[in-house]
Amino acid sequence: MSDLFSYNILDNDVEHISELQILIVDDESSDLSYYSAILSGLCTISFATDSATAMSMCVSDNPPDLILCDVLMPDQTGFEFCQELKSQPFTKDIPVIFLSSLNALEDKLEGFSTGGIDYIVKPVPQGEIVQRITTHLNIILERKKLEFYSYRDAVTKVANRRIYEYVFTKEWQNCIRYEEMFSLIMLDIDKFKSYNTFYGHVAGDEVLMLVAQQLEQFGRRSNDLFARIGGEEFVLLLPTCQSEGASQIAQRMIEAVNMLSIPHSESPSKFLTISAGVATMLPEANIEQGCLFNFADNALFKAKQKGGNQICVSDHTRIPKSFITNGHVARERRTKQQGSTQRVGQRR
Ligand SMILES: [Mg+2]
Image 1: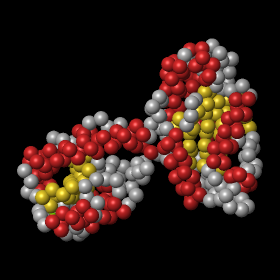
Image 2 (image 1 turned 90 degrees about the horizontal axis):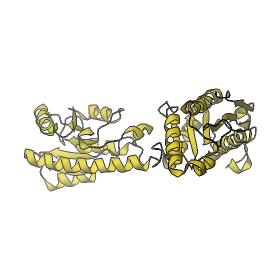
Image 3 (image 1 turned 90 degrees about the vertical axis):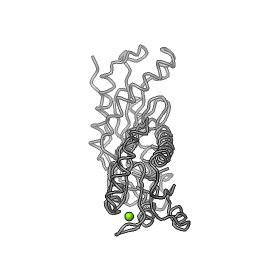
Image 4 (image 1 turned 180 degrees about the vertical axis):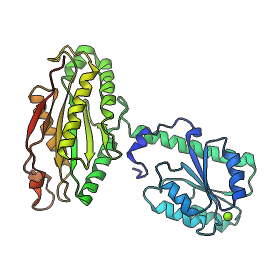
């Protein structure tokens, strides 16, 4: 999977090439304005007259979708710039097309060997460059669409299990490195099977979507991730979040679903509700991340046992041996929490 995204790739629902952005890198301002003018009818054009500026634009929150790069530039050649771009995890997937007056075969081959996807020789007739770039933009657009849908759950449109696993691993590693707490909230719709039986599967899917979209807004920070991981099961990953904060968020998530007031005749309250299991740990290199999930899952089970529509905070005091990959866990006590359950105020 590409490292290019911040998790808000899930917001990048691109439908047309006009929504894409080309960065033109050229030290000749006359060339810059000429090609900008020609291509500005296709999509957004940004430009840089040196490779350092171009690189800073590539690592920004709004990186280009395609780079048109000159080869002969004073500080760094286009080939060197492309090589640097391809060596960085956050920029390696940005396609580069060389646009140069160098016409020798060895120059073209060097362009491709450094990672360029095309090599266009200047000067190039207007009609030809527009057609060539349009073709590339269409390929990029299709790739972005596939990427977008491959990260999304088809029913609820929130992040799917595939991206959840990727983000969980990545953030677990980050929390180990920076010695930060990691919280995970596991959520489940109460009595969802009987909802499906009573109202039918079409209504069941609609409810899944409503609930998911209501809950997705709680993953607010850039490294948080809300995902559907199974039938009626959802997870909110909260890296660098303490237990108390996670519990408050879980409580608000339960209240947010209560606010939807979805009738459910098989539920004790006659409305659809959810339950949440909250777990927090200090990740360590010799503990498998599945341990945190397991604690949250057990807490969720307890919340369900107590009747649902409530949160339960994991009161784990020991890391089970099955999650320890390498010897003794010296700091396991640091993850100890007081067990508690909180019942959501009876609705209505
Ligand atoms: Mg030049």
